Length: 75
Image (cartoon, rainbow, N blue to C red; front, side, top):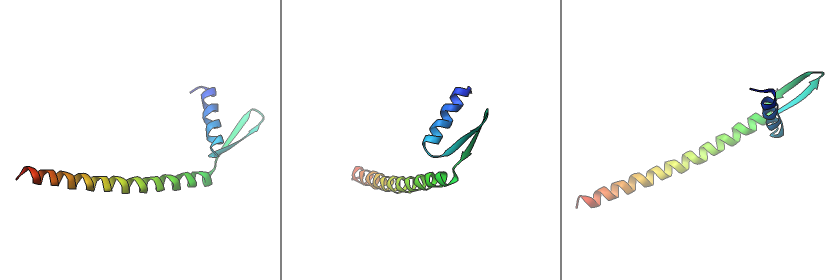
């Protein structure tokens, strides 16, 4: 990976508040912000819970619809 690509990734993460960077001469130091990552994790967990419930509900509808169609075909 080129230095320019690494710099771009670091900039994107910094803009998102996921890391901070500082410079000492030619050395660039980066530090991940654990608090920001905790917030990201909480958001992902909320989305996962939301979609699991929605997909479970969809599955129930599809299963009952399939059972109803099979019941109609047997008559």
